[in-house]
Image (cartoon, rainbow, N blue to C red):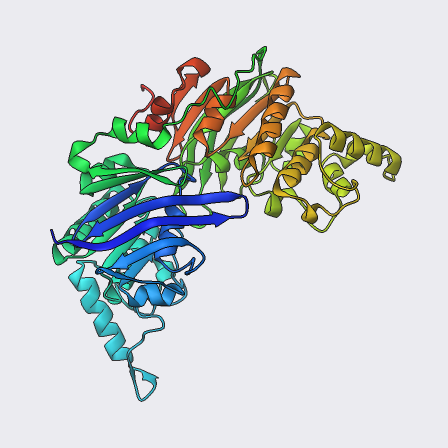
Length: 509
């Protein structure tokens, strides 16, 4: 093992209203696989984007030292020229082009300004042979499985003679056999002296291949230790080490009978036939209950709710019951008629029409309740909107203000008001406090508790584990599209939930 190749010192990065990184330090040795772990939102992606030049200097604070000299990358190309290659979870291949064309895209061998196709394909073939990949360089990328596409991304990175390779959740879409192939390649690269940063929620993989582990939490470095000196329980404790009870005072909900149940929900990835995002998941929710759904990114939480709501094109099966009676839900309109509301995770894309007024947004889903047979009762619509704005403390000059001019917290309140005006019996909340400030979060939390006290069944998805634990009466945990745990409030410790979320612990068969 050689000395330090890369050192990131006291890295800070802020976005409006959020400090994503607060003095994070990280170093990497030549020929080392160094794991970077943490909950969703811990700062891992932001740190890597700074290294990759996505966030250029001086948009961040701190120093990047490469081979002992400070480097300031103005863009991605400068980072790549320095020998840094990042393979993000979302692949960047052009699927209509061949494997070889993708590997050398923008760097094709040329002679007299014309692409030398023979050289292009022979170099690609040599690179694939070196990696022991039986992939035809002439094959269009769109004909490959997702696992082979991931390996082509690695070949592309190595064609740039990368000295530092960053892999962000590289096995998320791979089969067990493809994972073994990938790990074999990483082992060979390590022997060649390539240094790697490995980001994964799968702790068994982290312990299998990494030499050191760095844990991030809330934008700060919790610590770096040799993998051999840690175990999964200690890593999980460092990932989640926050006091939940102090942030969320316990609400006493009077739980009634089950009002909603879903059985055998299965969702396929529309772009990857045969890949299941949700695999035979079932759950129920009681009247007056907040049911939390925990899990890491890619676990299938959002896809589960979208499928039940009739909004996911990959739904293969779902049996849905309201008050014990099976109902048919094929579209969001069907779900609304059955008394289900859905605050989606991306309010700007799916929750709001930004250039419309607050009032139009709030009454959109429940307009039939405010309409006559042939026309909308505008007085009733305005009264309902003003009442909802007052109840939710939406800060705006009037309900005729454009939704796009509001703060994130007030936009989220408008989305919540929209669904409450449908008079739902079951309310799905997917990341209800994403991108809003602490004060607005507290108001949303209070509203969730009030709605549960009024008898709604609430199904809550959140990437913030303290949020799930602090608000939920019961928690189910998903890992790779399956339920791996279920806990009553008093048993849902951060360590127990994270163990299930990482696949380390599963429900008894």
